[in-house]
Amino acid sequence: MTSPDPEPDRTPALDEHGALPGGDTPPAEGGISGISHPEPVEVRRAWGPWPAVLIVLLAVAVSAMLVGMLVVLA
Image (cartoon, rainbow, N blue to C red; front, side, top):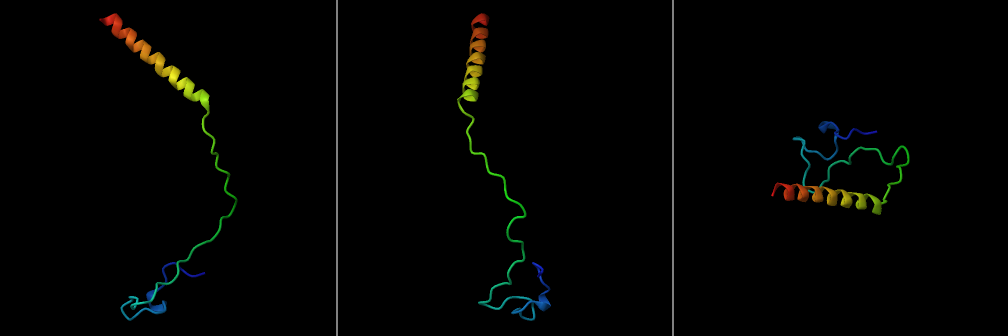
């Protein structure tokens, strides 16, 4: 296996200053291909109607309490 950052004096196609001459590409990167185990399937399900209904009912209840407090104070 090759190192992702090889020694400049052992890298082919580099000039004496360690730079690439025009037209050449840098050496390929080292790495590991593939995965070690299967990835779990992503869950793509929405919440459904019940959480939205509960949130709306809670918002309506809080709004009613705030309006009731304003009426009592006025």
